[in-house]
Image (cartoon, rainbow, N blue to C red; front, side, top):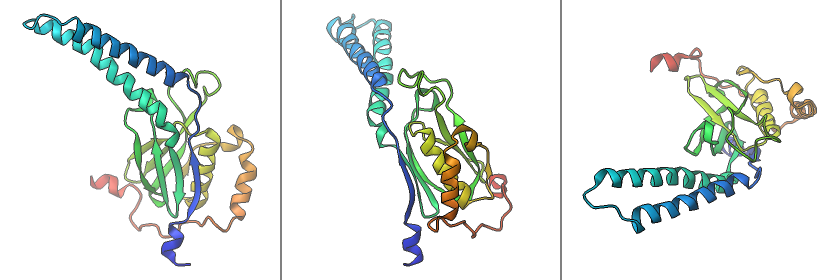
Length: 220
């Protein structure tokens, strides 16, 4: 097998799972309410054409919340397409943010050898009915690169799956600083780590750049 083909091999892949339908239904309901409000207050009950203030007020109080709720409805419907996988020496991801962790769906690749610090971090207070109790300790994967750039991904991927991704990063890149105690949070992973160490599929990365850590950040 050639080196190029090896680097394209998927070492581990984790998909998001649906936590529930409460958030989707709630956002859809508010979207329909705002659409009805727009029809009633802007189209049906048309204000006087010369009253600009009335026009702006009616449009802003109906369209702005509508955009917010439609955006969340779409994200709630499609977040199950999220994933994190390690392909060769790269971390590939698609991550839909919760309301408190951003607005833009994130996609991209991260070179494992560029990781400086990583770990699990509990998601900030969640405005989510689906995660309010059972998933109140839901975590996301935080990765900081040597350049100083940070990534917050995996909001809808289970803690167990995120922890397995971390084990692989730890095994591939032992030089990166690791800030989660998996054995205390998820005791079952101790066994998985032993299996991973014996695995011949995951190799430690050796070809690190000669530049000292943080050089790229200082150059900016």
